[in-house]
Image 1 (cartoon, rainbow, N blue to C red):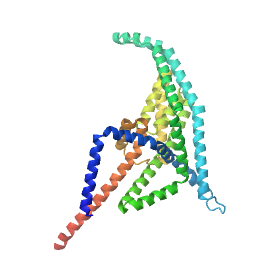
Image 2 (image 1 turned 120 degrees about the horizontal axis):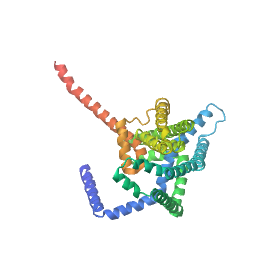
Image 3 (image 1 turned 90 degrees about the horizontal axis):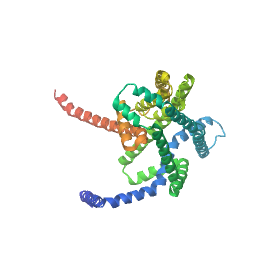
Image 4 (image 1 turned 60 degrees about the horizontal axis):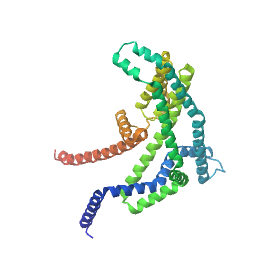
Length: 382
């Protein structure tokens, strides 16, 4: 078949399919939704495998270095199984640590904050009313802080209990997670086989240029996300621990909440540090106003030490994004996917910026070579 005719038939066929899809958009979306539900266990498994592959690969490299040069070194398959087992053990220990130490501490801090607000509200109300702003006084007089806090607590409890009830009672969700875990374990154990099969598939059905580009993009995604996840997780743990130690030694209240919030917000550059500082300072202002300045100074000092001496060695340049692109990634990710979007859009934008820079460099190189070829004949004439 003629190449131009083949291309024309492909374009016409694609146009017909697109027209029918748009005219039956509801049916198409329903089909895509059902397809997504069917593929959900697979997606869960590969996402978990992608995330856990970062610590697993680090443990595997440590074990290889440990047995390097020894006569009776274990095989690659055994090292991988041991690495997976140790990774799952570490994950289980983290979950146990959160459920037995940190979460009860956070609940206790939240309860103490609730009691503090209930105790101090009359004093705060009297202080504000002393300024004699009539509309403020009328509004405050109509506010029933006990009812608000009670409704908030019961509402939050109802939401939490409903969410937990949905999660625990939905059999399909449990099945999806269970299948996803099985797929995750298989993917982590057989990642070399899966990579080899994927390359074989690309080599068979894709052109040489397309194959090279796909492998390059996937390699860049893997490298960027691995560096981001490993570096940021370690940096968040260090920063949260330093903040908890500093606040505890100085006797600043709500050290646990501030430390956990700081560790979580450490994944969000620039914005996260400011958010954690503001929330921590507000909590200290409610509990011990005389220690507000100490709280802010301590937070700034710990952040400065971490940024200057720890972050460069632990994370390095992270994903290599300039501040303006980092902020744009955080804003865009937050708008589209909330907190998770704010975190994972940073390496995604880093990958896109790297690809754009590579293409720009190639185009500039081609333009410069073209200019050189044009200028050479004129120089010979001269």
